[in-house]
Image (cartoon, rainbow over all chains, first blue to last red; front, side):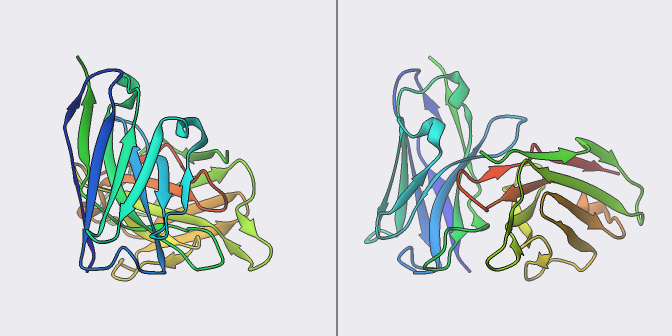
Length: 124
Length: 112
């Protein structure tokens, strides 16, 4: 069964760049049937999709974050990464990586496996 | 963006009773080309990530108990738990995948 594990700093200073990595095990990130995504959840609030990536490098980003977000994939390490620049307190959240079901020729569908999430706090 | 609105925000149901959670989308998520509703439901227990329960509005994910069911079409959807168990206490989220950005409802907290 596929497993996803997020890692990265739990504290980031305002105006700096948040950087997280998600390591995928039990399956290949190069599988044709999946995109890989990042979703966040501010404390006590709902879920917000950030963006996703296919192993080929094709990406979708949430428009309101697009200018600050970069998602990349390293197929040799079976990892995906998230970078979010110029962070503020509003970016404080639990960040999840998730597998995004996909059928070639279509668009990504639902998220069928999630990592445990990592809390990132933006504070000086 | 497609806005997803869930109701109620919180719900208290007795053990063994039926729980019903609603989700409304700001535009239809029914794709005419395949006649599928691009909607999923997730369960999130405290301190845990969301878990996929239902996709295509009514298809249960493998391993999900059959007391969970999804219904609806177009813009109005319902998640029903037919006989509430103690382990069903959680926050439930709906999500549309009709078009990016993929958006979620605000969540419904289910308590006993």
